[in-house]
Image (tube, rainbow, N blue to C red):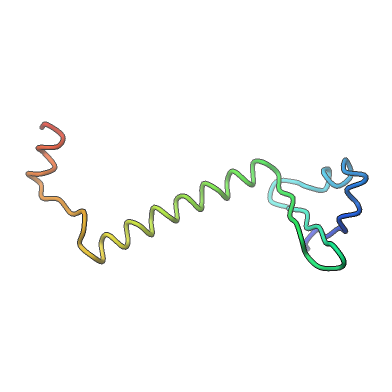
Length: 82
């Protein structure tokens, strides 16, 4: 179940931060509507790594579809000086 608190609870920010665990963000509302999300730094870094990985996978998928950036074995050997 999501941990939802009004942004006014930040007056007692220590209590709000205690609620923010790895994998369990705290959703803050303003005027009854979702406005902010607090994440543990480890969870944030994990999400950023996943985003970067997905971006790289998307680039690779596009390269496969278009046939760009493919190299012959000879070209690869030349680049690696093998």
